[in-house]
Image (cartoon, rainbow, N blue to C red; front, side):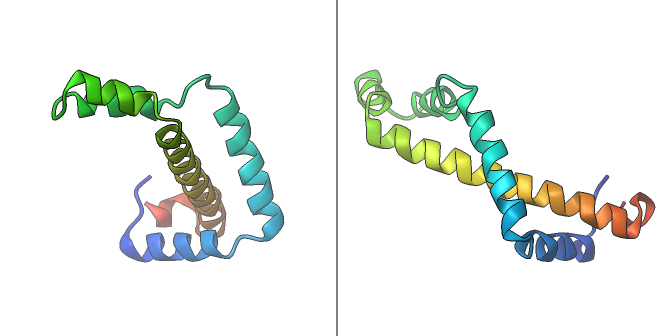
Length: 103
């Protein structure tokens, strides 16, 4: 299913107005998914990307930097929460309008 601009705006409005209880459930689900990974899946991809532009010693120092790992972890969690909120909102939108109109 693809959403047109109007549908996207409505979905975002729904996502922005989800009740606190729904947001808590989303956060708990995201945290459970993140706890399944021993390492943040963004870090290996990020290090591989950085090797195109920087030398190995700098990349190795970056990879060992706890602050960078915490920042990547926070970024990944925030991205997952945003996507999960929108996924819930799309489900609400689809139930409200039917899949045919949302496409």
